[in-house]
Image 1 (cartoon, rainbow, N blue to C red):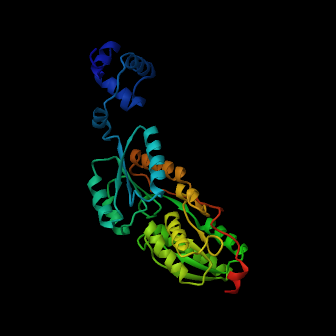
Image 2 (image 1 turned 45 degrees about the horizontal axis):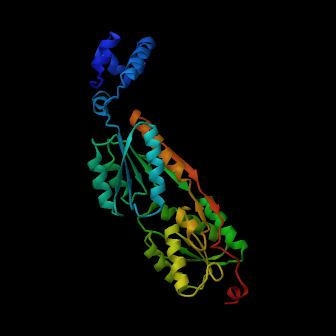
Image 3 (image 1 turned 60 degrees about the horizontal axis):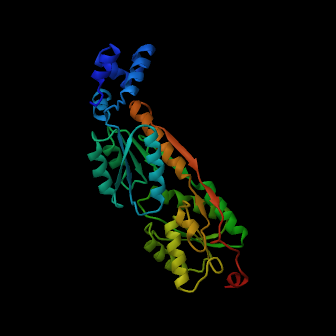
Length: 333
């Protein structure tokens, strides 16, 4: 049987092909009785609208891009899944791109996407504000875990959760802390470090700032070695992957967690729950981050002149086994 087209549907319904096209692309312009008849015949003929043809009418290609800095970081696969599911429900496809922790690659890739996708979500970008603004000019763009006044954004605010983590450690008896900071180019790393500093000043505790370290297991091993070189007893790691490297470094040097040192991560990726000991961490609402980013992007695609929006979602502290009480031996050391 020949594949159904807008022309065969138009002939069956006694309307023009243009009317059939409007039913699928601008249904609000078609009288309800005509629209229902066209849709009924289309279903009978098993008609599948062509995305290419729809693009000629709407000016859209039915494709959005998600740019991440490092797909091997366990934070991003969960975000990718949420973005993909939401995009699919919105009737659009997803292109995934890995910038490999390169700010220059981010700008080059976003620039190349113009005209090839309907919009782009840039997760945890490393590029400068000026470069991002220029690359996204004329392209619907949403940032995840980064804010710029001229662009829409969706962020996870971990400030209150990090305060809760600090209070948890303080109640366990810890008074000397290490801040294992993340990459200098990471906006989220700066925000997290600022929150930990504010808590430490408010509590009047000592805070040794170490780093920056890469957001990787190897970076965590380096952070762990730096942590061991101090007399601090508890540490805030930039993220869970780094925290897992810290735990491995301490274990290799015969230092137990949480028996001798305590460690808090951030993000609550699957690794945080499966590592031994399980990781006390800040849980980020990854499903909500991805879903909200797509929803904001779709609205921006549909209304390109609308003002940028900034959505803020809170993280929450989750206590697990990597934090424990300060022992007498530690207190007297």
